[in-house]
Image 1 (cartoon, rainbow, N blue to C red):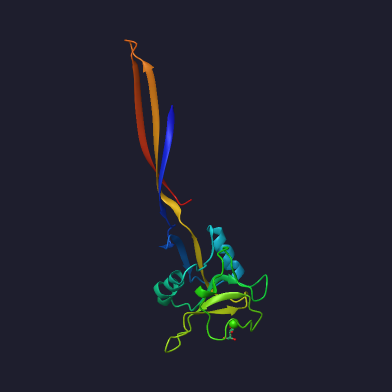
Image 2 (cartoon, protein in one colour):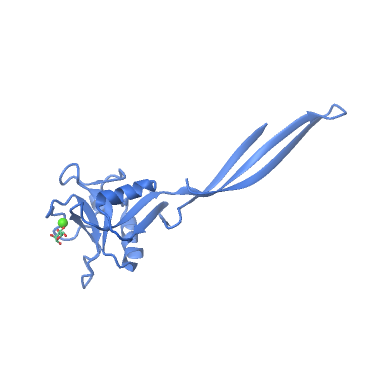
Length: 186
Ligand code: MAN
Ligand code: CA
């Protein structure tokens, strides 16, 4: 008889940051990407372009992450590609206008703009400099991915049981256990 017990710890792949029980990735690599290419990069890594379910998530992204980077324009998952003026998040999170943070006069669909960016334009005073703008989806931006945590540190306990009758015909049971670490994010 044998058995396996798996235990794991929620964690993020290397290069991703853990916040609010999600993993976040900030790409300021060159070349910058179109919205569609950025969304597909996030999907290849088991995520989507970032959605914001709460004001805390939204502000954490800008205040704790983007302000330290040089790049000023970042794709997020919000878009109205399917139906003009109906905004949806690419990961399926319901769009809550109370969590939105549009720049004044945006979204304006000025140049057939169906994708949304965070635009840090370093205004002074910086009142509107971390807000959202709809932009043509072919524009080249940095991007932010979000995904569920994976199981990075994970250990596996293997049980083996041996049972037999000894020379005096009494029942003997032996349990052998071994623990192994499994490395890698699922
Ligand atoms: C201006 C405004 C924005 C528009 C951008 C495109 O800043 O018209 O609404 O999205 O240009 O780069
Ligand atoms: Ca716009």
